[in-house]
Image 1 (cartoon, rainbow, N blue to C red):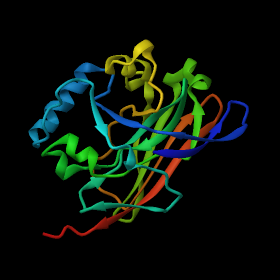
Image 2 (image 1 turned 180 degrees about the horizontal axis):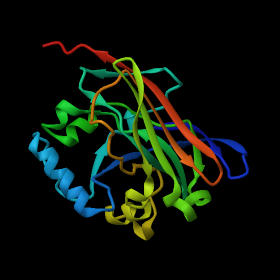
Image 3 (image 1 turned 90 degrees about the vertical axis):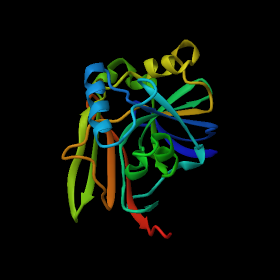
Length: 232
């Protein structure tokens, strides 16, 4: 799948880049604190969500689900049980790693049946702008993920935290089996999400950002959620 991005360098320059994404991987249960991950597994098991086969776990998802949305552009979903999750996303354009932000939009009702199936049913919006990983990797743990959702007509902070709470992308690459802790060319990986404030719930709009405090800049995405009827 060919996609076009604007790659922003550390000095503020911008270059258009078009490249093919051949495989998409979503990393789940990617927290650094193993005890906290195990506790969350047990919490979800109590409401019927099956435990992952490994920690972290990697889901192969159709690359055709990747999309880019302008502010307010809708993502169409089936039924009213879906919600977004903010994540850092890495793209391997040849040997260069490019960093974006994305939403692993997921069907929560289907998740209770199969997490793998739930990952496959919804679009995966990503930012139109990317940074070079090499520009931020030295201070990776300082980066901040945030998301907001419009729920019952009110915009509220949905997720917020440093990426330090998640496994470093290089470790995710290594555990997946990529050589030299390097994402293979043509691959993209969602690198795990944060806990939700106030509980997982659907919204009519989802926004997210990856914030670089050293350079005071952000990568952003924003989309509306258009719910399609479930017809028997």
